[in-house]
Amino acid sequence: MGPVHSGRCYPASPGRPADAHGFVIPSAAAEAKRPVRSEKHDRFSCYNGPMDSLPLAKSDPVPAAATARFFRVLGDPTRLRILELLLAGPRTVSELTAAAGAPRARVSNHLACLRWCGFAQAERRGRQVMYRAADPRLAGLLAAARPLIVDRADHLASCQRIGPDWI
Image (cartoon, rainbow, N blue to C red; front, side, top):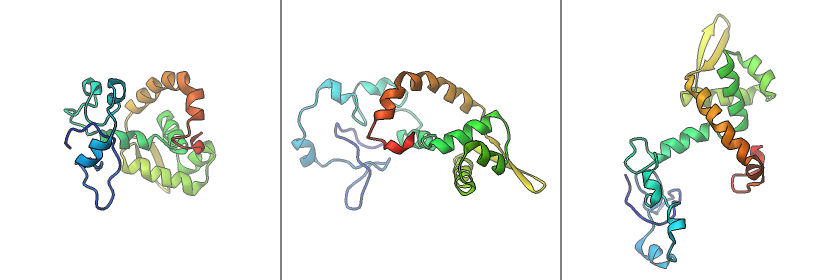
């Protein structure tokens, strides 16, 4: 685990020291220049503050970077749609292409990502390859997220930090 600091996290870049999770460790000089942060702001810092009591605390055996990557797999609308279709039952690439309304190459690329990350599995049946969700618990995760999404849909749609093309 990286050192405890109250600075912001930035992705590592050449020439800047990084912690075990690939985030830049701010220098002492940079930390000294930062304004004093209130408790409200400290709860959003990377390694300390009131968020330490949450499941993603620094003592959590699953690094925050792995958790972020897990949710990043779900961050693409086409990939999420494909996963939802696979949770409903096994499908071929042709069926997924028609249901997702995306080009075959894009569907194949997303399936490769889902397979690599352990979200989907493939099984050859003669000349066809059937894809299915690798873990049915993903349906529960998506179902639990729905009420949160509904409560924030308008706000999420107007967010410019994650890009306008996610809708």
